[in-house]
Length: 249
Image (cartoon, rainbow, N blue to C red; front, side, top):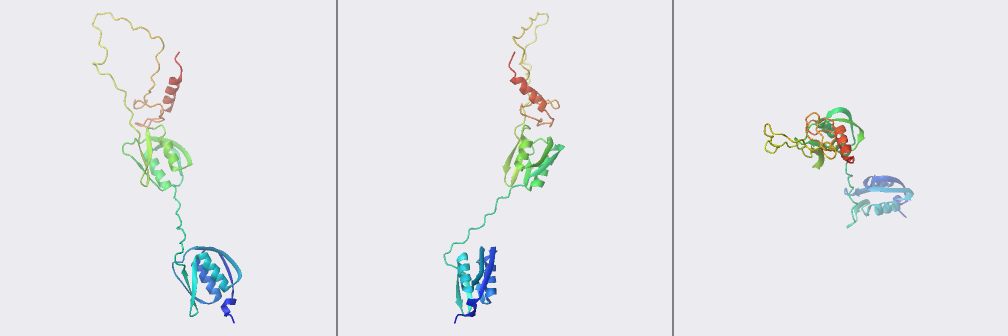
């Protein structure tokens, strides 16, 4: 005569439930004692309806790479020797949260601090970087997109550093050199006649390097803001670009 527990019908429904909990539910329905090793930990997916206890136990052991043994009426569940353990779950790389930057006249260091606060990453500004002011309308952008918008045409650059980002000056603009007195043309002797300069054969091209109207530093044609004083100079650099692109008359 078969033992009563073999005739017990089991109902299990596990969708990613921990294997230890599924074993505990199985033995609770069968009303038998069991011992389960604590290192059996993996998700289980199965659905059993009106399944005999021993059949359900065998199926669950196959699904979890375990084996069972019975000693004095107690069921012992242990991993199969040499069974490959389930692959460790990989933690997805966390990306910085998008940021919202909207405002006028925002200083660079204030913007950097706001990016760090919203995105949860470190954003530092190099001491030599000018504290430019920005008019921004970026409702929702990625951190690196925001940094590129800040640095484009402003003489700044950004780079990844350990645990965050760093904004630094790409290079200080060079003031236009002036001629020393010895390099300038000597003055004509007093009373000597000075022959007029011949007229150029064509109009002289305009100065291709405009100067900042505020601090008078020489500007690069791709700058939107002066990296020294932060003045908006895009209209000047755009005009200089157009002048260079016009063919000589």
